[in-house]
View 1 (cartoon, helix red, strand yellow):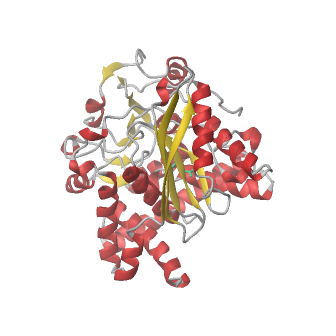
View 2 (cartoon, helix red, strand yellow):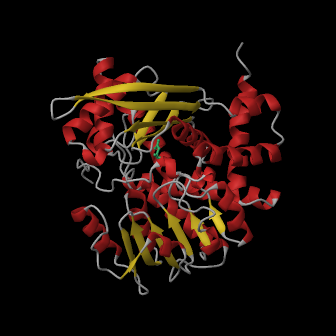
Length: 435
Ligand code: GLU
């Protein structure tokens, strides 16, 4: 498939961080789950302290010459949370709501995510506080290159490997790769993943997160004795992850009855025409004006009586504000951190089966791993090979987590944290503390 060199059309606008509820603090959300799993694992106090801290946090000023001739200074972060199992791995997001605390939480989530699917990476994340919607292509390129230069001391195929995240895409990764390569004086494809396929990207990477969500949703349906055929699904967020998940779930026979993005969306009892919706967003940027069903707000989507609900956009969309209204049987967390820790208890109480983010959306980083392997070998796989290996890893990981959840009588989220923390902890024990 040809690379998408357009700017992201699925740009996401988030609420002002000052309007967050206390329960929506991302680092606390991550830590409260970590603490519960650490307690159940009886993690030794020393290791507990080690794993509660990020290894490295970098903050850089990013001066950019704007098109109007003035210089603007942006703030960028890169956090390496834990690299005991391999190089730091994780996306870079461009967004006004980026904070060091949020980037740290997201970096920790990456560490747990890579461990859940057992790929040899640690966890990292980056972010630049900016409004990409209001910037030209030239400004975004200059911002990306200067940010890359600012964090270049940690980057490298063996140390830290970025990828796309909120409001960044293949094109942004091409600029990161080029900037790094110019500094190294030779082409280093394996320094980023999620690149255009023409320059060392992997086939299937763009669809990987949505594909992984589809695999685990099918397994969850199966777990409840249901078939994808006719199962009803609602998808919140219609960017790369949400639109791909909707398309593939539809292809599996599910009825995608509702889709929304930041502009709202629609409900169609007979099933939304997902391809038509994708075409619409390609042309118009959002679902606004798409007439494939009755108009539906995000709030209404969460209250629908469906078999599967896929939150696939941002953090904190399921909180104490709306958790009690949710009627879905299964939630597949395509986004990172869509559910607050306080909402977990409400969903548990209602008997809702949640496939947690660190498992559900791990398909993206899994194919990033495949991309990194292919770059390092200089030998590229077919799309079918990528998809088969992805399905194998997602299936094995789902069953690993399910088994642990049954053994310990805990929900899937706690089981996923237990699995990943125990894997990271084992490596720390083997490596010891360097003195
Ligand atoms: N940003 C994606 C995530 O949150 C992908 C990270 C990667 O591929 O490194 O999982």
